[in-house]
Length: 120
Image (cartoon, rainbow, N blue to C red):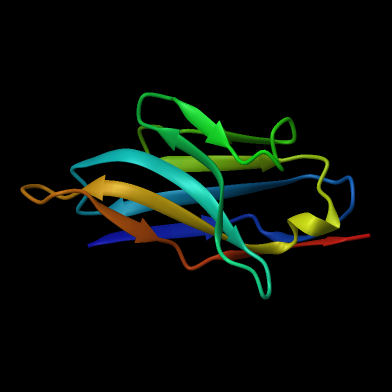
């Protein structure tokens, strides 16, 4: 199995910063991509940022210029640096990984979620 463990969420005032981390572990043969999604109350889960193993990144328009995704390093860890946070960024942030286990096709895995709350 593959496990994703997130850390770094919390409460911050508008304009502040937080850094999320996500470490993948388990019987991983390779990771094709990792990313961060978020889900606010009453809303659908949406992609925030993603990064491929080759370093190609993509961002939601709402976070471009404020959030930076980095990784995937030798420790299978990805980071999300969030600056200039706004109340509308408040959500549960979920880490996602597209990973292959030896002899098996790639599958998507999810972390347990990290709460990010931005106060005005």
